[in-house]
Image 1 (cartoon, rainbow, N blue to C red):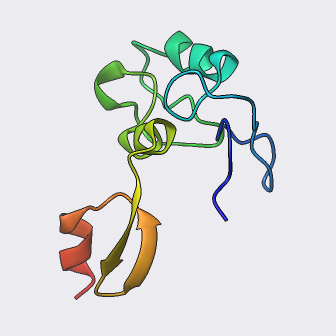
Image 2: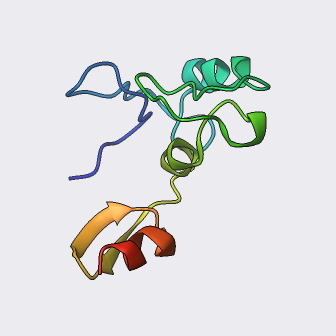
Length: 92
């Protein structure tokens, strides 16, 4: 079952759940991402990745926040993820 509302994690088990304003983030958590714009790190809690082009959030969490993930089947099985052909070819 897919979570409804804002996907910003509030603990290991739950997400915010507030009504999303843009993509899958609520106004408050979208503001947290925008506050990181121009910085090096990803604003997502616990993420150690660099933000994409200083956008405040890494490309993986940008896909999560905008809802651009889809269920895809790879050689290693079905995963709910963004497709990365380079990673897929390394698993063969």
